[in-house]
Length: 322
Image 1 (cartoon, rainbow, N blue to C red):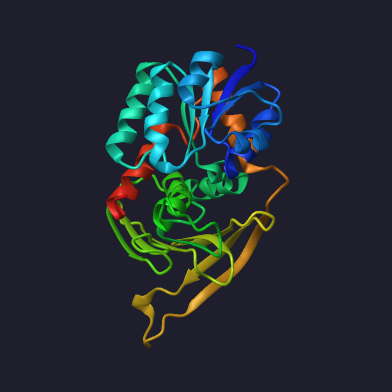
Image 2 (image 1 turned 135 degrees about the vertical axis):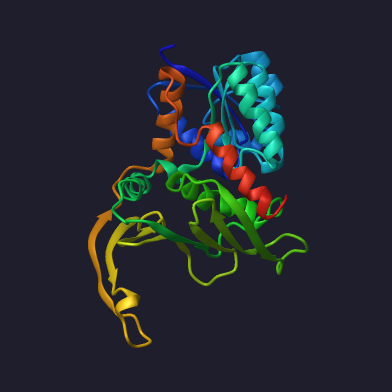
C-alpha cells in the first residue's frame, strides 16, 4: 500500500481540522466525508464526495481506513462497524464511554489485524515526549505527585461533561508518563450552567506504586490554563500546553534532611529552573496523523493505540461513569 485511502465520518469543528491535516499528508488520499448534515460536509470537504453515514461510505468507497470524528456517544458503534469491515480506525477521544466497550474494540482490531488509533493529540507533542524521557530516565528522581489544570471559557458541550470531554487529555498524558496502574480514583463534579452536565470537576488518582495526582477541570474560569506539573525527589517539571505558548521547564530541587533539622521548618536548599525547552513549529495533530499513517503502512505501535487508550477509559469510568 503506497497511499492510504481514508474516509472521514463527521464534519464538525474537529472534522474540519482533520480534513486539512489528512488532506495535506502526501501518503493519504481523502476519498469521502460521511455526515447527515450536507451543508457541514460541504463546508469541510473542499469538493470531496459526501455520503450519509459510515455504511454508505464503506459500501461506495471501500477506504483503507476510517476517521471517526463524531460525538463521544457514537464512537463505539461507529468504530465497531469500521473494524468489523476490516478497516483501520482513527477515533477521537475518548475511545468509548465504557471500559467494556473499549476492550471489545481492542479485541476486534486485533482479531481483524487493524490499527485502532485514538486521537490523544498531546502524546505527539515533542515536549510531552521529552518530559517522558526525563521522568523515565530518572532526572526527577522518585516521582511523587502530578498536578494537572485545564481551565477556561472553552467549548461548553451539551452532549458531554467536563470530565469526559477534558480529562482524556490529561489522563492520556498521565498514563504516558506513569506506567504504574491506577488503583484509586475519586472525582467531585459540579453542574452550574446545565442540569446534570458537570462544568467543574476535581479528580484525585493514586497508583499502585504510590504516585498521586490531581486534575482540576473547569469550563468556568477567567483565564485559559493548560499545565501539567510533576514533582520528584530531585527535580520538578512544568509543561505549558497552551498552543502558541508551549514550553517545558525543569527545576532542580533539594530540601534538607528533616531528621537533621532542629526547628519546625525544613529549609529548601535548592530550587532553580535550570532548563527551558520551548515548543517548536510542529503541529501535534499533524504529528499524530503521521503516527497513524506510519502504524498502518509500517506496523509501528503508537502511544495512543487502542490497547493503551483503553486504560484512559477505565480511569474515566472509575471516576465518573458517563
